[in-house]
Length: 300
Length: 328
Image (cartoon, each protein chain N blue to C red):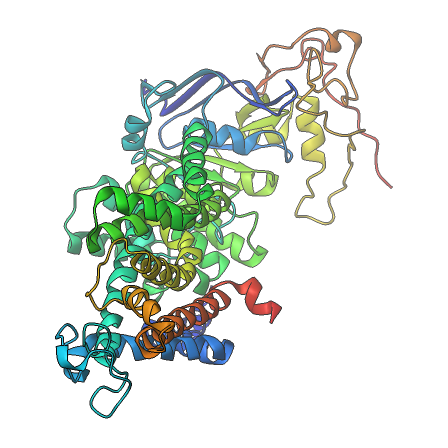
């Protein structure tokens, strides 16, 4: 090959990696406007969670015993609850719990699910059968009931909720990764990696993982939405996080008692916050899947 | 006398295909390759060439027979030890577009065998990687790119750099040029020839293209239905092919000189299924000079006067030479 064609080809793709990553990130706005809306909603709540200390007008667990169940006013924008605590401050502070549970739970799911999927898909055979039957076993139970039982049995703490949600949701990622690996394991580059003398762990994590992780990454936002929803449900049922912790599910539970007597604000505002965050995560998750799955992209 | 770098005896590979049926991909192959020697392996598609190459490197497990690499029997060697041996036996694949991890930079792909097998500091490894890239005429600008940004010829150069990175004793090349454009092919062959001279690595060059094999090989083995029907020095085999199959194969190859009178031997019928192998000589179903005995008796390889070894029952009485009809 002549030098001229070599330099010509070398200049064919002048974009540095960072610019390409940014282009890809910007692509979500063009390809999926709803995904972009979702991202804005998530960012909004993320800011609330990060800067809650500066945003809240009152201590979220300070009880104004003389101002119990006050309706929304200039002093208490979202009113006060049955303990005389400021609902507005509690709703904002609750964003911390939404992210604080969902992010570690999803990371835990990835940490468990990805290696299981990689090994099951690559090794195949009996190991694959055993791992996948176990994974299926986890999925046949309605997750909320399983989560309820396990959290109730293992003790009520934030850490337990995270561990249980992360563990219960790992099959989703195991399945996605395994499916990708099944398609890749007989590909030439894997054989070439074996021929070069790669040990199995390097085949799995250096060669297969970067090529098999897209589907799993596309699932993360949707699974985070699931974790937010389930953790709130657990709290609503009185398992895991207890009142007066300013967690949305726990707040809705407390507020539900006052709905019938007309104090709607106690449950409404944490409910709206919960719906909005789950909605945003799901929108973003859908956009992410559209963006990462070329088949879905072209179907649009 | 130096010992061969590779010596395989009675090697077979069978694949079960369900219903109790078995594909006989490689059947009782005996081969050896001396240090620095290049053995060309030719055969039609489906003749088991690639399977044989993979079994030799233990990328596939042999069903029968033995593989001796560098004086060591590696037939039963556990995976972990095979992995360490891969420093000395590397492979170049047919399709360079899919043989490289799309998520790794060319630099890391070339450096990978060094990283796996050689204890070098990071900067030493980088230096070695750049040397390798220079050696295979791959511009250093490509080192920081991903495989998708390179052409087929450039990718194959990267694959070759990867294969020679640890100075292996044996390189198996599985049709390294057949998926490349003709214009790129010559450059790659030239590079391989240079590398062979410099590194003294033994090569097993698998190809269905006789012209390519003739250019690069010291010796040639002809494969038919997973069996070596003839092997010998390149020139002897090309000048006086002994086995009827080799004769037919060579006559199908167009000489470079258009004035050369071509007389073709066109074989009748299809290659028999490797699931139900023919009895006796596996070529008898298509052989123009087959006699009744060929269907019963399995021929042993015998030495012919021109020096190569061929497995044909008709060699002793000279009946192996196919009469050629002149084409019009």
